Structures are given as structure tokens and as C-alpha cells.
Length: 353
Image (cartoon, rainbow, N blue to C red; front, side, top):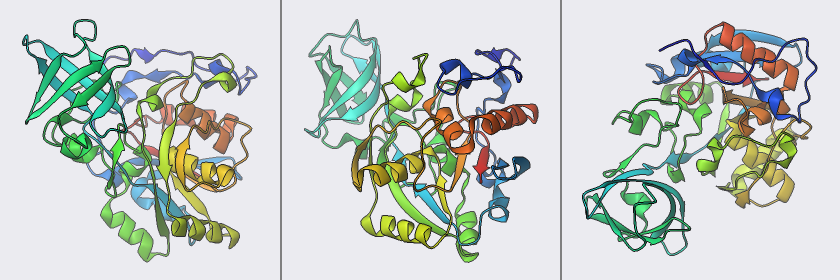
């Protein structure tokens, strides 16, 4: 791969930045640092440990995570499972069609979709996806496809493709059906993986539990809006996308009690962080959230964060800067680039203490 850099200028260390301005979330990344494949073993990924109190950065591997977690930590994981949301179909004319499932509609048969080539397909036209699955473009303006199978999500394994992010420049493979899921994924509904959790193995989780760390599950189904970059020069004007979440009452009460008992709450991923902070704000254990976390946000539930490295101009990078402190996080990103960490979904991880 060539050394052409991912767009966006590097922040000059002597320029005073404004954390509400979009250009403050730019950084220069060599394209070869964007991971195209997962680590050979999940927990062999590298781990950048950032200590906010000490203003320090340490390098290690993810399998040594427990060496840095506070004793009796509570790790909050997102059990959402990625659906094979990319469908390749054929028109009656023989032309190829690509459909990307976005949001299921209440009738159980229909989805809002992205569809190519939308201009050529007529409203009411049928599309054959194989495996006995067909769909009809019911509403071209709103991009609604009605399928002949109810609860299609449960039938995608045989006909769908794993929707790898656009910065992974290859076709999905059968291995991605497993690699692009956490080992604890169970609740179907996401079109992108909660990537911080990809580094856990069953063995590592068992080891962490044996050493006194607890795990609690929640669900946030990640939708395509997660890939939408912020475009407003003042990031506070960005219209945040909405995602559905849920957490069981017993789990949330256990987490709240643990925090009251001064045990550390560790959000595994920005999605887990967003759910916990949403519930703290609205007191609803299930619903939709469009919470947008950027510098200045007051965290009520999360003490520490495990996360991957995020795209420039993304709401995820802004959340991380809100949590870790803007200056320290941008310093950490430059350190990761210098040390040739692997970035994004299949890349390495960081632990913010």
C-alpha cells in the first residue's frame, strides 16, 4: 500500500486549538496504518494505556489488560451482533443490485435501505437475492424495500455479506462473519461491530473473571449513522444519529451500586459509554439515544474506557477527547502513529484510565 496520507492536516503542536471547532479533530494518518485484517489472535492486538492523572502513556498488548485495570473493576460490554446487512441481488433484466439494510420498519417485512443503482430501478420492481428471498422497491423516494420474508434479520446468514467499513478496501470473506463479531455477540441488529470488544477472547474473559473483574451486558445496535463524519464547523451544531439501546434493570442497578461502592466502571467501547451516560441522563433502561458527547460533557457513570482508534472528524473521536482530555488524547494519537499502531475497526486498542 502506498504512503499517501489520509486527508486532513496534522495539528501543529504550538497552535491553540478550540475543541468545539471541527478542524481540531484532524490528524494525518498514513494509509498503511489502517488495518485491513484482524490480528491473528484477538488479544494479541497492541494496547496503548493512557493514565490521565499521571499524564502518561504506556505500550503493551491487550492480553495483559488486567495488569492495568483497577481491582474489582466492572466491565460493561455491548452484546449487539452484526447482521449481514449487505445484499447482492438481481433485477428481472439481469442487472446487478446492491442493497444495504439500514432500519427495519414496524411491519416486520420492510427496511429503509441504501440501494444501487437507485436511478435505474423502478418503483414496484422486484429484486431476487437468492435463497428464496425477494424484495420489492415499494417507495423509491424513501428507499423502502419490502421483502417476502418476515424478520429478515434472522435469515441473512446465508444470503448476506458482512458490511465491512468503507476504509477496509477489500471484499468480505467467510472469515469476517466470525472476525467482525465480538465473542459475546448475541443480539442481532448492528451494521457495524462494537470494535473495542473485538479484542476479547473467551480465555481472556475467563481469566479476568477469575481475577475478580465482573462483566455486565447491555445492547446498543449500531446503525450506518456511525460512519457519518461531522461536517459543521461548530461541532455542537451536528445533528447526531439515533440508535436503539437496552440494559436490564438488574444489570444497571448492579453497576450503579458498584460505583457507589467506589468500584471502577469500565466501558468497553464508545457504545457502552453512550448507553450508560444516556440512562444516567434520562433514567430509561430502553429506548433511543442521540446523545452526542464532546469536550465539556460531564460523565456520570463511566470511570475508564476501552476503545479503538477513531476516524478524524468523527463523533467517536470527539467522545474520546471528552473523556480523556483533548490535549492528552491528541498526543496519544500522535504517539500511536509514531509507534505504528494499527487503526480503526480491525486495529489496536487503547485503555484510558
